[in-house]
Length: 103
Image (tube, rainbow, N blue to C red; front, side, top):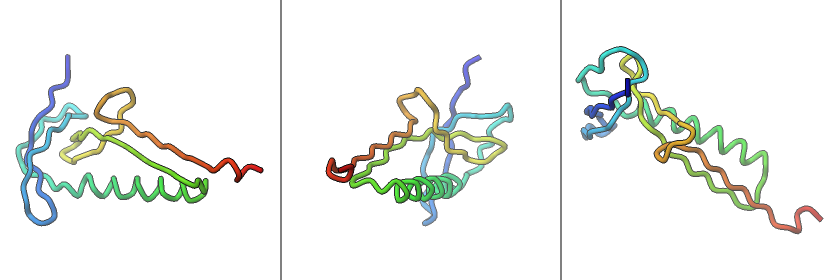
């Protein structure tokens, strides 16, 4: 059985309401109540801080981080998903060092 995504209302910090496509992660029925987008942004903030710390430790001359997420819903809570092998969700990190740093 293929999991069916749903469109739900999500409220931003300033009160703006947007529609978001979510994928159910568990067997519970998705309720129609509005969710708060900070359930996602708080996780993104933690993820980016952790990646930034790793990059500071590696000390590259140049770094770029690109990630995409899908939004899931589990037990009524929005959950960001980094899913391997999909076109919508991934984590790509590129690090570059100048050649003279290894001399």
